[in-house]
Each structure stands twice: as C-alpha cells, then as structure tokens.
Length: 146
Image 1: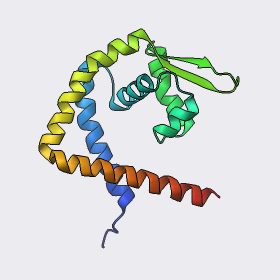
Image 2: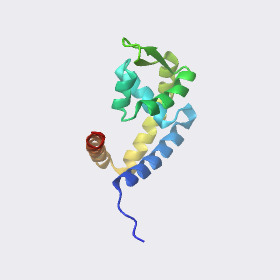
Image 3: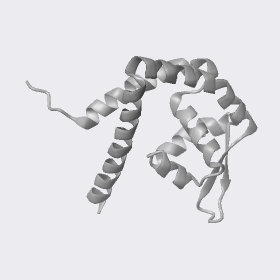
C-alpha cells in the first residue's frame, strides 16, 4: 500500500522531533519548549491580550489557556482582566523573567546545535518557508470556516 504524501503529517512529525530535542535541552530549567516560547513571546510583547497572543502563536485561545495554566500556577505569568472584562491580559512575572534567563542559554545551545546540523542558510530558508506555510494555512482555514 502506498502512503500518500501529506504536508501536514510531515510538518507534525518534524515538529514532534524538534520539540523533543528542545524539551530535552530545556529540561534543566524546568520548562518545556511550548512554555519557553510563550514566556519569550509575552516578554517581547509586554502585556498582550490573550486573544492577540493566541493569534501571534497560531494557537486557539483554549489551547493557549491550557498552556498558560501551569505557568500561572507556578507564578511565571499573571493574567489580568482587560478593559473589556471578557478579555485577559498576560504578563510575565519577575519569577518568569528569572526562569527565562535560566532557560535562554539552554535554548541558544540547542538552536546552535540545530543550525550546525541542518545548516545556517538552510535553517533561515526553512523559517522563511514556514512563515509562508503558516500564512497559507491561516488563509485556507479562513476559507473553510466561511
């Protein structure tokens, strides 16, 4: 039986493999790659709305909320009520900044190892292609939800 070529399945497999490598590298910090990504993004944005953060991370609000719960429980992020009482603002606490400072060198080391193994130019091209794929996926999702 021939296995059909599926871009989505190939992407998910690559994501799982890379996530495992980054999770292993970040283990001494106590963070997983998803948590590191959230903390990094929130720190860069300041105090984003939960909905804006979800959009920027290409996550639905429910999934982002599930990923934020342990960070909030551990005192690494804080959620506040926005101007519209239905909206939530996300911010990184001082403990979250400390955790990021602990995790950043671990992330950088893994990032460098990946760039060495894969190739710096190839990694840059891959990230550019992934941005295009993300945009195309969002457009397709919008088309199908209309």
